[in-house]
Image (cartoon, rainbow, N blue to C red; front, side, top):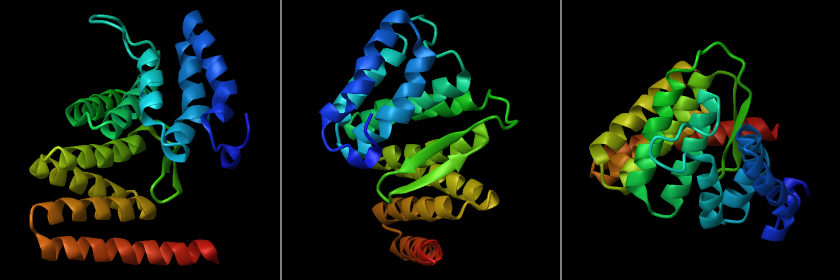
Length: 220
């Protein structure tokens, strides 16, 4: 595989995709999940914008019919697959499906022991930033923020505001500066959509100040 910065076309992902399908055929779904998250997810979603292909590939990791057990063995990995699928559905405009997937992902994480042992990197592609997580419960904040985005786009403004504010409160308690910046921005979007312009302006301004300060810090 070429380094991420060198990926400019779908053929650059051929080595990973060539591995993906045989592993699916062998039933090695945990290996497939790890391969997708580490080698395909960001490249397909952010670098190439191949949302439909990404969505179609991910369907192989979900149960293929009613009553079928989850294909990925660990609850946290099941939640991550659901979250990635939800982002794919949102990319394609399937907003109600995305909302349901995010909600199911959050429920699954709730049953995972929050005792560390988690090593995840999640990318905020619109800002080209990465967030690192060591506890499963930390992933809930990302799912809530993405859920709020899907709910706002679907017109569920009250739910979107409640969920975004919950993610913001959790981010503040965890002292996650970058996350707080993103959550504030999404709170502002919901407030703006429902006409609360003064409150939206306040949220946007606070988000911008945090972004400017953190950018200066990173450039030192």
